[in-house]
Image (cartoon, helix red, strand yellow):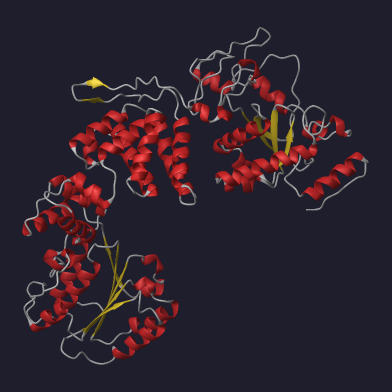
Length: 627
């Protein structure tokens, strides 16, 4: 006799054997007891939760000759025929392979005839969302007014693909994912029945990998019973299914958090040689760090994480090596890296470079704010003195103090209670080994509180546009410096009658053609890095450069483009790319011009148009371009 898979042999045969679906079992069973049978049902839910099995049980219950408290007897001729699949009055159709209009029309013609043996003709349409539009239309009238002897049961994993006209004619029941404990208990019952030597940790791991689907969990047990010799342990199971064990994950996560490239690269090499999928490995790393985050957030992570005691101790230990904000940033970076790997021609190189880039974004001091205590009550601190790998991103290296523009935000200074002239360390950027302090020069004046009126002899003229400045070294903005940046009217000063006086083309800064070429190169880099949203919004701006500041000017009708380019992430990315292009720290300033303010700067326009602009400017020929 051919061997039958475990999930088929252990398919539930009555309502009592259905696992963790009481919200569906109870109303269906009550309809049998009361004799109030509906004509159409829609079963929705994830795979392996019992939709088709419950449809077969219901078909037996409505036709059973010896019904017992709503349950089929599984002993009469009708029940045995349905279990064998030989009853002509119960038709199970796979809509994935029978999704045409002709299949549904044939079924609609057959449903008119009375059942041969049973009381009802039951049509079970599995994967109903795969039916074509014409097939749904052909089913619609029959489903609305079926014969009294017909019952339709539609099962689907994607109810959103079912037309609303079909859903409105059915009684809908949603199947939930099965809880971890329920799946583990069912697996233990099956293992004991077949005398399979398996540990409790291995069973919980199977339930965890199944993600709430009982069929997947039973299939894993079936695979492990034949693929593992001797006792089935958790490590043997992970090796069988091609997943990383907890010890390897802990070592890899520790190398990431401690910024140890010398330990990270051998682990990636080991991962590569094991034949595991690198894309799936990134997902596993992100999930492991998510467990570390849970250990930081909650005092009882055991209620949310189903792992062994040793793994829980590793998670608690790693939770003390990094602060919460940096850990969240790292997990988000892994999610972004996952998208890059899907289109990378060299997965290993992309994974190594991507992980090293993420390590460079972790601040030097990343000890958790509230160190957790494990084992014998010893508080965990980072204690990390390994060399920083921030040199892999030269664009983010902190320049010499004299090259850094003094920009301090008065609101930030007032909120933190700091003295003017002190530049705070940016927690989102790597810092050098030796701390750098910036002392105020004697010529600098104290910055007044934002609530006080500044005492100045000179008044600052109002600007025609709004401005946002971002410095790659310091996020704070000095009030005097910020006003100096936007004090001059763009319409009067940025557009000069003499091209030699224009900050865009003046000698010693950058020619107009060079500015356009540099801006186009920056836009190309945005495409390579995958920041398409920033590219679309930024390319409509008019750019200009005065040697220190890079201006992005938007028309008043481009409010959405201006807001997107003014977001901190966009400003940070643009600042890094522009600084790399200019080979010096550059401040990004985004502003929006009023309707009466002329367009300034250059755009990423075609080369032929740029040449015409240059010739007209040199020959004093007026040029008007209609967009």
